[in-house]
Image 1 (tube, rainbow, N blue to C red):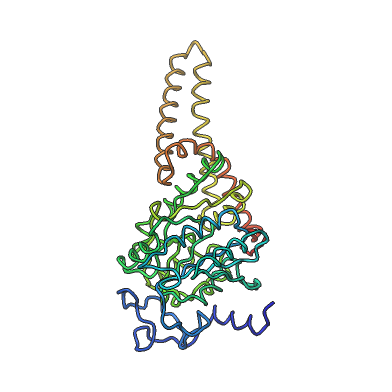
Image 2 (image 1 turned 180 degrees about the vertical axis):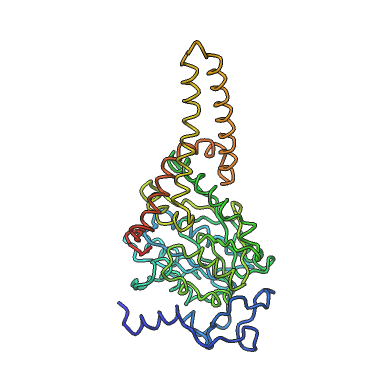
Length: 409
């Protein structure tokens, strides 16, 4: 357990408010990669080194530090780490040009053993234990910030243990961030889903995300919409310091979106896109984990979660009710008005077909395959339930749970 003094020191790092300084002055933070000189929201930046990273700056810095937090990820961690270390090459060698830090977040399965085996066989891979979780911190923020303070990279890539990275992804991401002159780059990975529940539900969720957070607007510095995906979050070192690091969002369950909003407000530059060419992820391996995960996140992603739940119930009514009503009218055989009822039935069928096409076009924004989008109406009842459940836990109970821990909502 940490001492009380250590806890106070860490809290100070999250909330340090020294006097406000000119960000363009000599010896202080300078905009990186050609970013605007406008300071944006006036931010109290640390006057002395180490306030965010809790250590003197490494000399020299290397190009990149990849940080992977892992809590009970034995089923996915091996594939993730292999996809990362395999990107080492002569011009981008792990241990020389970049490093990989795995943070074991108090796992109770084989996660630490898997990470340690790779660390023993590959130079440049480090395994760290996450320190005891303090009040005011989520487990993931606690884990990644532990690694960030040890990082030697000019860039920090935060990526989840359930991701698999395409060959060359790391170097391409660095070039993409430099090309767009941004301090924060985030990818929305290709989602790998299995089973009827996931294949019908996930397109519904991701189409709503695409509508709520259009990548073009997220990447537009003049638009107020901000989003990022913690499954792949690349941050320039000085930009990370300016955002306050994960210490600045220590208690946030949806820390990636919070960091994105800070990036917009503090004008460090944000670029976000769907990136099936770069990274993929299998978020959930069971229905129970899926329900727990989306219950934790949906009310934070959609501030109108309860209203959205009601609208999805209306979709169910329209998709099922209109054809049922049409068939009922056709079978009524009310002789005095049989032709009229037949005509009404066909009108209802046309309305149903139009609604079905509208529904599919909406779901197609999710970037899921055609078949998954086609069966997505089957996921509407569960989606509506999860929206309501998330709203209830966040707004009424004000508590959420994830991986054996409870957090205030």
